[in-house]
Length: 391
Ligand code: ADP
Ligand code: MG
Image 1 (spheres, rainbow, N blue to C red):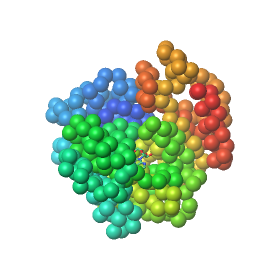
Image 2 (tube, rainbow, N blue to C red):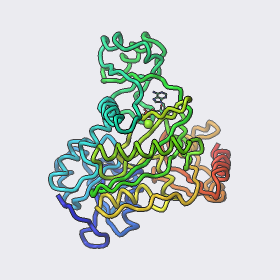
Image 3 (cartoon, rainbow, N blue to C red):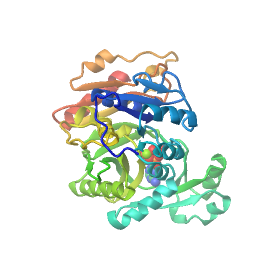
Image 4 (cartoon, rainbow, N blue to C red):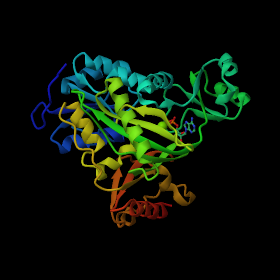
């Protein structure tokens, strides 16, 4: 496995990425800006990342031929999606440098293993995961403590954007929800009184050097990220420091290399709770492209190429607005209509990012807009103005 920096701008300077979505596309943009070529492994033709990458290995994520073809193009490989088969990452690591590792990815792919890991970290961080109970059989519904209700039943694997979740008020609803999950192993989490939600991006290099970004504050709508404000207007200096320190401890305990995003809840009594982590750049970190010295994608490129990590300083308050396919159908129209980008771009500080998805569908992430401004108030005002235009 190469244990040496892959410098840009040579005939070998190619970085690989598992997955062809928007995160892969923005990774490719960052890599290319620095003089790398990019190879994407993704079964779908014309996907957002393949539109911009130099090489597209069109294969399933677990295809031995596909993995071999990717390794023939590059020995430095990362992933842009959480549910990449951990075994594929392990397979690639026999012959290549893989970050994050298959082991790290597999912890983040299983909510129960992830919570067990967070609980172990709590010895050092003092921050616990949500109170929970593994539920995969009818018996588990009976053995769950009363204290966990009302709660949220979540599938242990493959949940994202609020999918694979059911809110339950009592044991009866819990039993019904378990049936609706069709035998998938689940975890019941106590419903917590959230004051607000934050996420912390951290990155770590092969040499163990780690950096942590400012706290971002997230608002979700229907389980999908709606807006991110950075720096978080709600967080106190104490809570911010505790979350950043915990994030650094977690990334070290994992022995993780690359960019990691950790989501926390801040409860109404001020308690910090660790929710989940994503082993990759994250939607809530998109503000870093326009508002930080080093974006989360450039950071991933640096970690993967085994180069020094970049400055994480925020040079401007930022407000990020996710653009879902719904805005193409605003006013309840059945035929999609392109939003008024000219009006959006007339707003000072607007940075428009569209992901190259041709078909707009409801709840589909089509792009995002980051508003930077001298003050958070102005950035927020710009965001509200954009919401008015998009309808
Ligand atoms: P996903 O993988 O879909 O992002 P999350 O566990 O982050 O799943 O849940 C999505 C959202 O649901 C969270 O951002 C939060 O708003 C809400 N949520 C999740 N778990 C809880 C909980 N235990 N108590 C209160 N709200 C929760
Ligand atoms: Mg989440």
